[in-house]
Length: 263
Ligand SMILES: [Zn+2]
Ligand SMILES: [Zn+2]
Image (cartoon, rainbow, N blue to C red; front, side, top):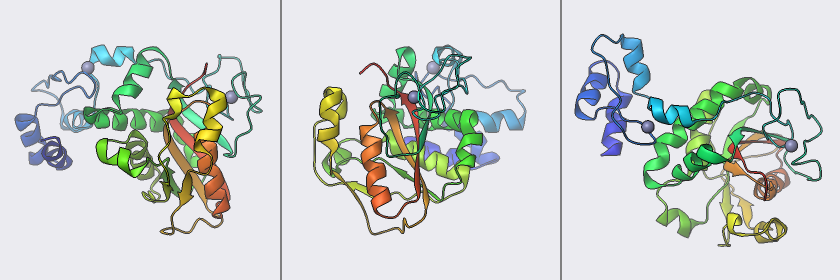
């Protein structure tokens, strides 16, 4: 049903009106109906056919700022500019050049990021990816990336989980940047325990040599935008960046929805 709804909403004009009639637009987080006033202009109606949050869920979204650590993407205080790293990353060595995030992995935003991993969470992942673009498009453009890739998921896990937030975010940002989305650029070659269940010192060992670059794309001298949903210690993104650089990539930049700190 969601697929039929999305297809119908992709159509403009009459198709859009039919979609509103058959599938009234709902909040992409709580699924509550979004009321459409009859006198709304066409442009407003077109906007509402994109994933949206209701007012209540929108108020749960933290205030987005552009003040982030340029190295790890952690949100900073208003008067701090950390070009060489912040409190959360000053002792970390990353293989990727720099990172951006929408917000810290905390409170209601943490719940939203977790919801993105559920079957019904794909629309919210698209919505948050759009917010990331709105907030950080200047920096994303400044990286002059040639292609977008995402942190992969082991194939058995991918079969069970119908959604993969990193994939949704990557496809959205590739569209916005008008560059290719290299969907199968990386693969995970063995199943390992989930990083979130491990202590920080165990994470590096857990992901060591589990990723491979596929032969579908040419990475030589390319600037790559690597996408994940959450960046915590940075070990997963670093391991993917290592593989991409080994395959010839010139630079790897990272974009995530949330920057997890504290563990
Ligand atoms: Zn809602
Ligand atoms: Zn930092």
